[in-house]
Amino acid sequence: MKRITSALLALLLTAALSLTAFAADGVDRTTASFGDATATIIYIDMTEENRAIVPLIANDSISTSAPATSIISEATNGTVVAAINGGFFDSYYDVNSTQTVASGNYPQVFSTILSDGKMICAGGDIAAIGMDYNGDVYLDLVKLSPTITLRGNETVTAQGVNTVSTDPDAIYILTDCFNYPVNIPAASTVVTIQDNIVTSVANGRTAYRNPDDVITLVYGSNAYATAANQNALPVVGDSAVYHYAAAPSTPANTSAWNNMRTVIGGGGILVKDGKSMVDHSINPTDNEQLPDVPGQRSFVAKLNDGRLMLGTVYASFRTIADSLISMGACDAIFMDGGASSALYCDETFITTPGRKLTTMLAVVDEPQPVRKPATPAPTTPNGASSWAQPSVDFARSLGILPTHLDNNYTENITRKEFCDLIANFIRVKTGSTPEDTCKQKGLVVSAQPYSDSSDTSIPYISALGIVTGYPDGTFRPNDSIKRQDAAIMLQRLATLLEASPAGESLSFTDATQISAYAKPGVDYVTSLKIMNGNANGTFAPLANITREQAVITMVNAYNNIQ
Image (cartoon, rainbow, N blue to C red; front, side, top):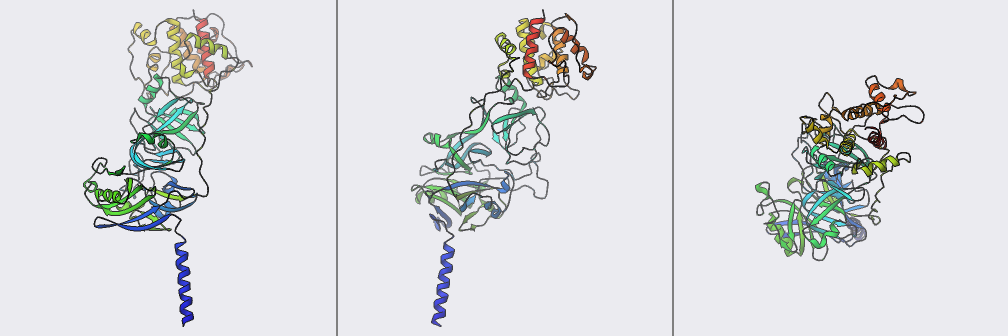
């Protein structure tokens, strides 16, 4: 009997040791009194080798929800030693109805998330926890702004990430973490970026779904017009580096906040520099969030000794803040609460959430250090072809060439860009702006004649009859131009300047491919030597006209129209 008892004790001891083996080094689970309530707490020593704070995203797709156990499995690089639920999201969407951005019926995330140095959600002023690439942890009130740096020196600041806006003044960013189709107005402009290079510029469209490994920069119509006026538009081939800018409430930490590997936004700040902030930083949306109203809460704190604390408790914000300060907290924020409250440690949920979640904050022991990626060097937009370079240089010297078109010469010119080029040509050739020319001719010019363009040059070039829109009321400013259509526009420009054909039109081996409506224009501009054919005897009427070809036509028009 004694031998059986001894064997049983040994078995129980072995079992107990195997259970405690799941607890990671420097991770301690306990409870503490917060006023009349008992808080469940996890202390975490963040000095353990390769220990990192990582945001976990449901289904690896922002603004979707999943069971908390499923979200824990999203950590593929290392072992989750502790976790807590993330920030606020719309948990009251109708799961039985179709989830779309247009209807607003989807689990939209309201908190800011930054992962591997890239923002994947929201932006703006937040209370947040962040870990920089040195492994140091910070909690603060901070303003995060998503940015795109064009051509190495021009910064575009967006209002948000994966938060869609219909405001014509807005600029926002979509990433491949956002898998919902988005209806982008045709008047907006969609710029796609891959491998830090602008790959396309196009009009908005319905049911746009962000491709994998692509950053999409969306300009509202007014925002695009403003960028155009400042010659700050992205063009295909430009370098475009996605990053962010941070402004924390503690200026001394600005450098660290601009070097973050991860950031997870919370609902508000509880403690700052060892002082309660509940009367200054909490903006309640209902009575349950008032500082002295108890409720189910989740919180994250940094202690004076450097340890991190995760916890859940049923208490008021004031009680939590006062209790944390008494326990040595220097900074603390609260996360989403109520049924979203979740706390995970030792491979189990100590506090089990009562609903699906969208995000979680996890502390992960990774197998090796994660290094900050090198900042890509800005690329130099492609130059003009050797045969086009003299004309480009001459156009630049005359002032015909707009600054924003002085690059990427082998790319197709857009309808909007061609109007900009023509506007400069008119000003240089006649000494009068297109606007003054319209006034001289008594033309009434609509400020926005087309539904999809707020550009400043298009209305005047259109009023002068050089370009026209489409029957549906659009201009399609980002569309390319076929060479035969460019010939028609140039014919109208030459006619405006009262030019007369000075010679015979040219013959081309592919003349049968020139559309009937375009043939008079091709004959006219080739007789004036404004346009020419290719070395092989073709005109290539259905090919798109490139920037350098368009610049050459302007130089030819300048030289040959008297």
